[in-house]
Length: 174
Ligand code: AR6
Image 1 (cartoon, rainbow, N blue to C red):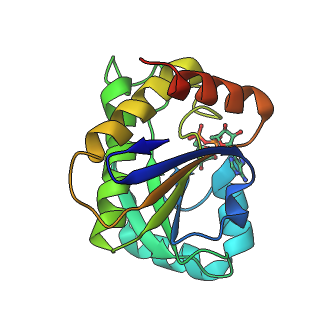
Image 2: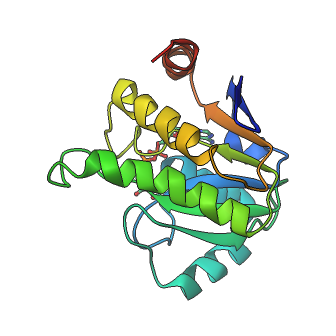
């Protein structure tokens, strides 16, 4: 599927194995690591990612910061912070949108051509995936209206159920 000039790929997989210019991490405000996809990225990427994260001194919800990727097969990691569902006073939708949109902007600033996202906020942060996918599609569509370096964006889901939710919604006319 194509949004503007960007190929959108939806697949099942482990984002730490993506051989792309950049992967996005579902981080927290400290940027100092955690569980889930964040834990996997820091474990496989090694100490150099943590050292660079420390220099950023945290990241507000809805924003993103970039580091190189250490031992991972990609070049950069964009650490984006999604909202904890139910704890942001009705601002969750906007904050999740911003996490995606700001990651895409940062990828463009660094001239990345290929970028892979996990499903931000739908694990430990409890965002219902059927709601989150609507925001992901909107952010990608909106971003594809501007010129950018990005040619390919992959949405990498960790299990079959999440994959189906994404495929169904992206293939629908909504
Ligand atoms: N590749 C792709 N997706 C993955 C992988 C992987 N290797 N591992 C997990 N997922 P979560 P959040 C999926 O909890 O909800 C951390 O502790 C997972 O199945 O990683 O944004 C941070 O430090 C789920 O669908 O991120 C924060 O404190 C999705 O990635 C907090 O969790 C996101 O789940 C962030 O919570």
